[in-house]
Image (cartoon, rainbow, N blue to C red; front, side, top):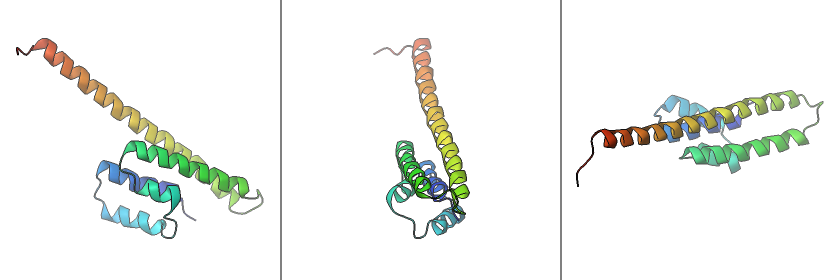
Length: 123
C-alpha cells in the first residue's frame, strides 16, 4: 500500500522549493507508478504553493470518496482512514508553509518602508 497523496505532495514541494534530490524524486515517482493521473498527477507537477494547495484539496476529495465507497469490513478500510489523517495533516503543514511565506513577504515590505523612513530618497 502506498500513500499516493503524500508522495505526489513531496514531488510538488520539491518543484516549488527547487529541491534537487534525485533519490527522493525517483523513490516518489516509483511509488506513484501507474497512479499518475487526475489530482495526483497535477499535485506531483505543481509549480507553486497555490497549485499544491488546490491539487492537494482535490486529491483529498478523491480519497474521501474512496473511503465512502469502501466497506468498513474491508481490510484496507482502516489504512485508508489513516491515510486520510496523514494527508489532512500534510494539508495543514502546507497551509502553515504558505502563511509563513506570506509573513516573510510582509516583513520584507515593512523593512523596506522603515529603510525609506530612516533614509529618505531625494528625487
